[in-house]
Length: 250
Image (cartoon, rainbow, N blue to C red):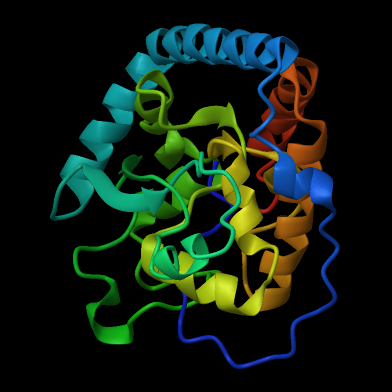
């Protein structure tokens, strides 16, 4: 479920708010305990099982969506884009910091979605924030976004191990680079594998401003602090009414 329905325009220079990040966020993902590893294996197994079941159950829906996209607008059925994924690196120190200055912030991967915009939709306007009645979005695309059906192909990303069902939403490299210049905590989202839905998505609407991004970052970091199999299942269950009632969807 995409929490970001936009590509970023150039962001205005603003004063960074005081960091709310504690060391527990920075250290997440580097513990080498048996308990941590067992939990990660359990979560990976659950994600694989649920994604496989979801693909089988939603396959008829995905086929119908594919036909609708193909019949109603020119262009490919699927939309692919490079996004920034999990950052498995330990915190850099000393001379490592200089070497990492140009790092993307995480492992790049290709995300899959049903296409909801017209071909070359950003060619004239460039990247813009999300908006209602977006002229770039097709009629069918608008319906898919309301019910988050355009995100279904990301189940393949889950099966490939690039995403989880629950986690922070991944961003494209150029937007990620810009956001981390304005929100000090933003790169810490990459300490969890990106997801289709997340704590931010069930509590907040699509991004329409930098403040929306800040709010979602705080939700994402809170998720990282308390992530577990139980927390993932809770967020999955809470995602259902968000989709059915179209909360935050356009």
